[in-house]
Each structure stands twice: as structure tokens, then as C-alpha cells.
Image (tube, rainbow, N blue to C red; front, side):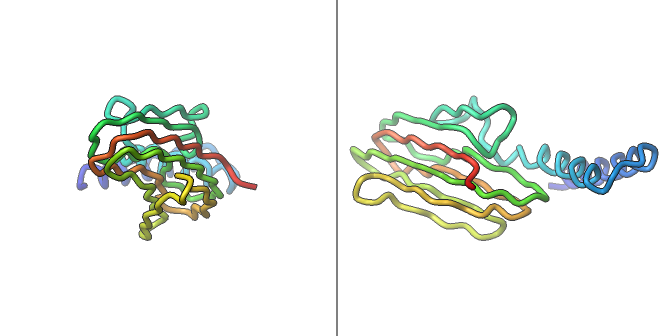
Length: 157
């Protein structure tokens, strides 16, 4: 944690020095700061090589894309989509979980608020979230789960 804080402080100092020389607009400063915050937040998202399932992002955007898994007695957590930002986003998540045994659920963290969602009688979760500035993440939680999970994340209108 101390190392992360030191990196963040160094990045802010460097950004400040660059911004003074460059004389950017207020929006450019916000965008640059948002980029730094987002890069640091990527440590919270499960790396592709460590995922239980498989993720496809849309370009470099870590908030949207698709995810699927086929599991046998799987335990753990995949932090699939999200990040930290100074900008607000509205995200629509569609999840389909077909369970043979065990359990899998959607957990969403918006800032410090964490909620877990279970599927309806058809194995579906479809919900829109307001990702305000701060850390926002969508994850799948596996508890001795055998079955399949499919999830898409897109920007809502």
C-alpha cells in the first residue's frame, strides 16, 4: 500500500510539472488525471492469466466487454470489469448463470458500497449501475460452482 501511495504521489507531482509547461485546458487536466487514476486502479482487476473465465474488453476500455466461463467445482472471484475514475459512467450489466451445482453470483462495488446479486428464475441478472467517480468493479463470485457464466457490460444510455 505504501508503494502504491508513493507511485501515486510521484505521478501527481510529475503530472503537475508537465501541466505547468504545457498550459492545458481544464478538461485536459481532468482527462490526464483520470488516466493516471485509472492506470493505478487496474491492479484491482483480475489479470487475464488469472481469470477463472475468459474476458474480451472493447479496446482498452476496462469497463465494457464480455466474459464467459465453464466451471467444474470452482471457487474464487473474478474481478472482470471496472476501474477507478474521476468521471461518472452508466453501465448496463447482463449476466446469465446456468448452475448445475454450487453457486455463482454477481458482486458490484460502487465506491465503498458492495452488493451481491442473485439470478432470477431464468438464471438472468440485468441491471444498470451508476458508476460515480471512484472505484467501481463488477465481479463474479464462485462457491463450489459447476456450470456456465456469461456476462456483458456496455454503456447505458
